[in-house]
Each structure stands twice: as C-alpha cells, then as structure tokens.
Image (cartoon, rainbow, N blue to C red; front, top):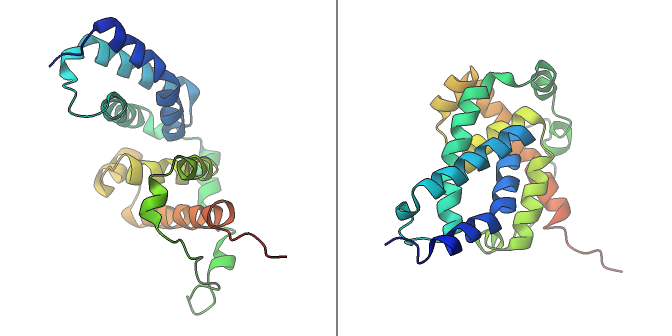
Amino acid sequence: MPPSSVPDFEQQIVDLHDYLLKFAHLQLRNPTWAEDAVSETVMAALARPQAFAQRSQLKSWLVGILKHKIIDLLRQHGREVSSSAASEDDETDPLDWIAYQTDGHFTEAPADWGNPEQDLRSRQFMVIMEACASKLPTMQGRLFLMREWLELSVEDICKDLNLTPTNLYVQLHRARLRLRVCLELNWFAKPATP
C-alpha cells in the first residue's frame, strides 16, 4: 500500500532529516559522508515511495535504508582513517589500569544497571549512549558501531578494514570498556547521599 499522500510522505521525510543526519554522523564521524548517506537515503525513499508498505514506522524504514548506505560508504572509504587515529587506538588504553587487577579480575564490580532493556527504550538513555559512543577514539568508535549498530560480521569488518580478528576483538573490548565507564558515570551513577 503506497503512502496516503505523496506530499505528506515527503514532508515526513524532511521532518526526519535531522535525526537521520545525526545517526549517520555518529556512525561515520565525517559530516560530508553523513550528508551523502542521508541524501542517498532520501533519494532512494522518494524514488520508490511504494516500497514503504507501512509495515513499520517511516523512521525505522528510513534508518534501515540509511544503514545500507552507511555500510556502502564505510566500505568505499574504509581505508581513509588517518594513521594518527589508528595509532591512537593502538596505544595502551588508559582505562586498563582502572578496570582490572593484576590477576585479571575487575578492580570494582560494575554498577548495578537495573533493567538495561527498559533503559534501551528510554530516549534520555539513548542520548547519553550516543554521547558516550561519540567520545570513543575514532577507530574504536567506527569498529564498535560497525559491529554492534550496523551488525556487520567480524569477517566483513576485518576484510573491509584490513584487520585481524584479534585486533578487532581487542579494539571492541576497549570500546566496550570505555562505554561502560562513561555510562556508569553519566547514567547509572547513584546520586551522592548527603
């Protein structure tokens, strides 16, 4: 079933432009690439409005298209990460000494995260999560988003970015550690009692 009216459909897409751009920028960390991905998404949606069968929300449908455009751009520009960003990620992570004891156990147990599934549905949590993800070092952020948000396979990521699986897993571990610390400080921290 095609959208009820084309002008309304077009206006809804225009209304979602900023959201799509923010999503793309978080994934790509390059404003030009993000704008390209969103433009291609909008053009694809407008070229085939009948493809939106209203089985999902328009926002979800557009994000699905955008994910594919982002993956295409990452593959096209995958090797354009600066050497300084790559070397920055290869250094010892400053969180390693905070997170682990010499015997490999956590120095502190993770904070009680309550009900994480409920938090994932919270708009405020997603704002904090996006802010934490945007603070990751460039390569760690890119790898984390490719694996966890774009759901690319380890094999595809390693092939596209010329990485070994071991290096990918180390970078993902470091990214998750940084996210854990950021989320514990900015979302799960218990207010200080007087």
